Image (cartoon, rainbow, N blue to C red; front, side):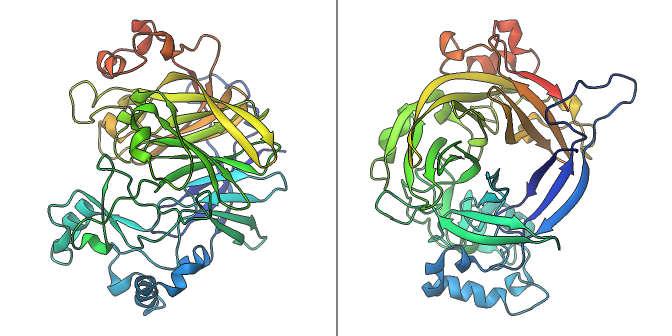
Amino acid sequence: MPSRRLAASAAATTAVVWAVFNLSGAFPIPALRQGAGMTCEPAVMDAYALPSTKLDALNPWLSADVAAMAFANASALDPADCHPNHDILVPCYTTPGVGSGLARLADGTYVGLTDRGPNQDCEDLAEADPKRHTAAEGKDGKGFYLPTFSPTLIFFNLTTDGKMLMTKAVPLRGTAGERVTGLSNTVRDDTPYGANCVGEPLALDVGGVDPEDVAVIPGTDLLAVVEEYSPSVMVVHGGTGVIQARYVPASIAPMRAGAPYPVVGSLPSVFADRRKNRGFESLSVAPSGAHLYAILQSPVGDKKADGLKTTAVVRAVKMRIEVASRSAATLTYDSQFALEASLPAAWTAAKKQPVKPTKVKLSAAVALADDAFVLLERAPDQVLLYRVDVTAATTNLDATAYANGTALELQTAGATRAAAFGVTPAAKRLL
């Protein structure tokens, strides 16, 4: 029968809807048919919605939080509109985004993942409604509606009447059970403010995480999770939410001193040059459990700099998984490699042409085989799905002059392919 896969569409401030797609038997991927006008388009088979769910169902301590309860009461004033004061720029208390990441479990149920929690972009607030949101004027950062929110694993199944039935919520925690927030770690991250970007910046939290994808480590009760701040890869216990370790670029590991869990500085320092809010977004764990791939959302380097603002080179890491028991595993850095994002000409559906390279994002992955995965790329108004193969021909950037720094990104500049500089990226094939 045709394979069924789930895709998620969710932000931290909106309800989540999951759609099951028929990829026409595309798992495993068949040879693509050739011919003029041939396309390979997925068809929506089913859709599932998360019923109204209060945030304190995810984080029980919020029921005793004065600010959270004020938020909940304002959100509940109008049954037809959960946005406080009918302001669509303000999140709802009853529509948590639980689709930052998704993994299918062995029993056929699923685990979803929130990101850092309900937040707002200060610049967007000031631009969209400058009269109502004067406090956001001139601020470059994020408004955290609930600074005490902990990013959370959401376990659920799908019902025959089109609902996502949440069976368990597991907030992320430190080694000794400490709450882990979604707040920014350092000045390298988005400046955190309170609700609606009012007032002075909030205190930074070296242990805060902004999770973006999740995958099961086969044969264990553990999950691999990637996040954007450092960026980092984490090993998390699915039953307790305890972060067993957070693996970050070596150069910034000292900046995470004081985090409530072990921090390991084993990733190449070039990954610390990720763009704000564009860290590790996609994750593929080998079905054998031997290793994982973590992929940045965008190229490294200043997105406004010449060359870097047009480059299509996006970096990824391979990490070996070493399982000690069902409840313990470690990751060891193996290598880094390049992918090439789709160039502006590929984005034919975008209303505004040409699409700026900085608008292209690599946003999700799912394993097909140990060294192959489906990658979701997106730009305004369009999504492209690719099969990616990491082969023996893929260049290990650690063995080149491009191991650190942005020379490869600058030299390609979106106009020249990496192969011209002796670098073979992972192979891609449009699905």
